[in-house]
Length: 187
Image (cartoon, rainbow, N blue to C red):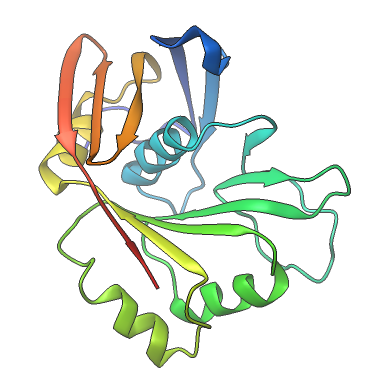
């Protein structure tokens, strides 16, 4: 755990290798009292991996029928979710409700380990989640542990857009070069 684990706001100065992406130069990621530092890392990585126009951290849904706050969100111009990322452990029953409440959204469940990937579809099926609606992404646990240990209140990232075929990451985090595969799946 980082010496900054008591912080509730983490800033990331971002430089992107691909100037066509128009990734913001700064990203602020908040951490709630009940969230571990790993949640900050997962949210920042998800934001960068899935970056697109109007993508935001958390965000306010203008729909009182959706009682959840997403980790990473994109809304259409009418305020409906078009992209939703849940980072870290999540109750499959919650994911079932998100699928029902955001029927047109691309939904990702992002985890800090690849070890759970094989069990995730069975957990979703058991909870009654409609098949074909959830995509999953898992990172190597040792990479995430290293990033958590390197996390500071103010961080710097040199980002190279993620590759999905095969799934891999390359980026510099606080002057440490990271190159790692990740796993993706569907349910």
